[in-house]
Amino acid sequence: MLFAGGVTSVAILILLVVHLSPSPLDTPIIVETIAQVEAVSGPVHIVSTTRRDRPSDHLLKAGDAVVRGSIIRTTSAASATVRLAHGGALWLDRGTLLRLDTANLMTLESGTVSTGPASTGPGSARAESSRAGSSSSGSTNPASTGGGVPGTDDEAPQEQAIDLRTPFGTIRELGPQVDVRVLASGVRVRVRDGVVRFQYRSGVYHLIEPGIELVVDPDGRVTRRPLSTGAALWELDRTRDASD
Image (cartoon, one colour):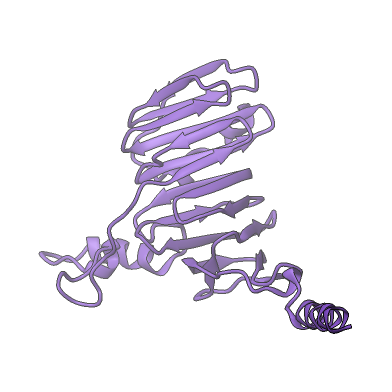
């Protein structure tokens, strides 16, 4: 009888523990902020999850934090500049879907992403002050160049390499001035500064040097051509995109 009573007590205790323990779906996900929105033009959506069963979909505004695993979607009339926690920035063009998997890995499902110093996207405050600062004589404004003041809280973080996945392959160690666009006919990578590697989904690598535009179609065929000089990546003639 004592044994039976002991078994019953243990069973009741187990039931209580199971009942009172939080459901896995209610368990908070570890939230890691990996970027901050610097500028938004038009309606830009973000889907982020801080609880396993409660994804949040809302419109972005300047100053918003971007957590690990978030998905940013720009509409056909919107764009956004996102400043990364470890330095540098991403500019998302119209009609872009980007998932920020980690601080060093992102997935571009569609649209266009450009990299640059924080921040160089069109319409950003730093881009405007950079243009204004370039006309003044003799001085350099750290804020206008995306840098910081050494030895202070404004010191710029050390930029880290980023891998960008696309449906057709992965751009390894995304450079400081690179433009990546996912097209129906493949992927296009433009490099203004830095040297990047494009790894096709078959595993074949292609080295892309500064001043080169690389287009890879779904079958892995590669087309290389020189970039126009003098214009920012996002200012390049869009009529060329139509021919892609």
